Length: 421
Ligand code: SF4
Image (cartoon, rainbow, N blue to C red; front, side):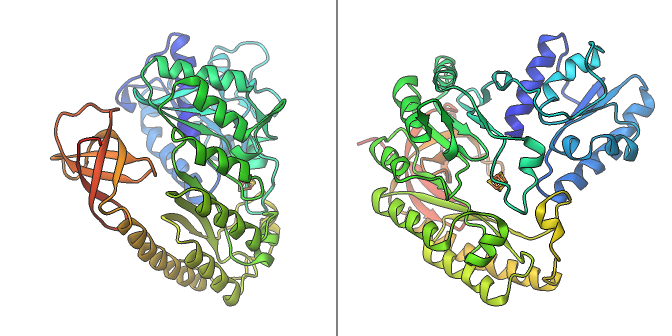
């Protein structure tokens, strides 16, 4: 979503006469599009602001803008902490940056009030000439206790289904073959009578796109109908990212996740039963306030039962402004680190095993370019969203080719191009 917002902001600046430069030292305006989800992301922004101060000392007319979630969370405080920042524009206001720079009436250098965003301003974005993102909804109404998103991104609101279908159609006309529908919780998408399964099906059938993905899902809203739609439609890629977060009902309740482990596992069972090939990925937090050893072990049990293809795994850290910041962060740091390391080790073994099931299979894969480490090989993304490397040169980026998987480690598949049957 950040990438999508950055591109939309860049095009609105370009429309007003700005142009991109290749090197930041040549820029008269530097925009930092920020994330508040983890403390590390914010520390890096402060680090970058320190680094780019040297340009501003040489060119005092240069402007620096901090936009989106961190701007939303810190507002005036950010300028107090870093006085060389000129503009602080929150999540509903970042697209007003050109107006703020031009000093248009009603704008100011710090703008964070909600209720100003016109969702139609959030335009689809091409990540490359052959793949694109379409934001279908913004914000979140769930208020998981550890998460800053609902506070910085506001209430959930959705684009119309017609808008989304047209946006994907337009991308297809421009050569895009793979589109990803984006939202904080795509499964709760609702516009009139259209819910997410209906939307996904419409986009697939009416836009002419070859490969369709979506992210991210919330287990309380992922319906059997969505799985049925995926099962019937080969255009929808067989990858589901379904964050479990924890394996104990008490911890899930403390996290405000609104589902039980039993409910989660039932959905997984339905997915596996109805999608003969599916790649499952997840997010997990260990060391949540009050999490006991037994509750942590319950998370490992879920991981072992589901057999995820991969996972984003974190140890809990306090985010100021969230409900969880009021809890006592009582799991010692060394226990959090131990729990995380054990989980990572376990998941890596499972990822390796899951990737072995790919060996000898043919996966239709979208060519993305060359391997960074080995330019002799080309890199592509399988239907299940896994990276595959294969010996080839000069094939067109954006073409979809059948690749037979010959070997795999925990992170990457290795294969060769075969002739389609
Ligand atoms: S569903 Fe929960 S974790 Fe996801 S964005 Fe909303 S509040 Fe945050």
